[in-house]
Amino acid sequence: MNLRNAIATFALIAASVDAAGDMEYDYEDFRAWNDFTGSSCNGLKNSPVAIKTKECTRYEDYALTHGNCKFKHTTASILKNGVQFEISKGASCTPSNVIIPGIDDTFHFAQFHIHLSSEHTIDDEFFSAELHMVHLNAENTRAAVVGTMVEPSRVTDNPVFEPYLQAFRVARANIECQSCLSTEAVAAATVKPGSDNDVHPYKLVQGNTFYHYDGGLTTPTCDEIVWWNLSDSVMDISVRQFNELADMILNTHVQKDGQCQRITVANKAGSTSRPVQSLNGRKIDRICPSSMFEGETPVIVGAVRSDASTTSIGVAGAVSFAAAAIASQVL
Image 1: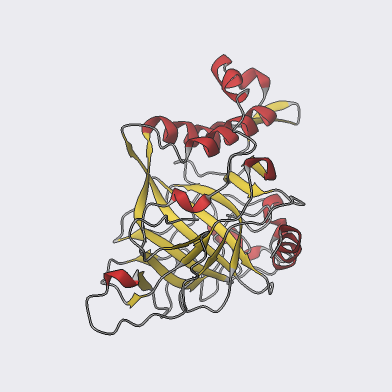
Image 2: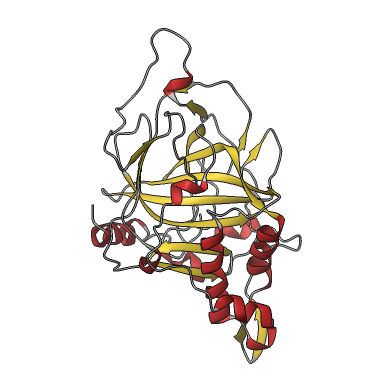
């Protein structure tokens, strides 16, 4: 599937939620989300949810295929509900894709975004942030997100994350009120990520086991069209990287009504995350790579493609990945 076709289907599946980026919602009054036209925010398959640690329920392999998109094919943005890195509309490249075990479909990478703090919980624990990679299928019927928790626990910068953070620095400098930009921020924004650097989003996730369930978007209108896949491992970044990321999300200013105003819709505590929703009887699977199976006859649904550009999450040493809004909407 080429990117032009991907963007076309992207626009179609986004039709019911594309206006969310312009909706006047925030992370203080969640009851108001139910008032939007066509809202499913009071539905039975909403997200996020509370996850409980469990043994592996399935031994199957995700297939992750790197595309040929480069940084010159992308757009980084600072939005009112977070940061977003997406494949630019009309870009002439093939995006990365994922095949989820047990689902006969291929989902193509569109963008990733980051929430402060985490939206899902694991054993009732929140994490510092949560990264969502948003994918869409070719039939214009479903989205898939692979997500990872984010923690500032590295003693050195995460080199995989740094080019994306640099792209956000440049994006901020392009919209920030000049009076609010420090000399250091202006200088940092002049260094752009290499335009020919590969966009391999799956390298951002450090785990190879995922919690999988059927859910929805986590911003209005909460459409219930998402296959969720949340890594049970944490993406580690440095304290410096996290502090800069949080400052971008919470303290970016733009000129509005003649004044320099913050654009964030975070709550007073600095969170851009929706509270956990009821499972309503839904099952959460913990899908582990087939290589972890110790019995005699592992059940593996769907073959993992063996071409050189495909990464099987069940293979030792494999590159794994995580995963925000459909169109301008953040999940």
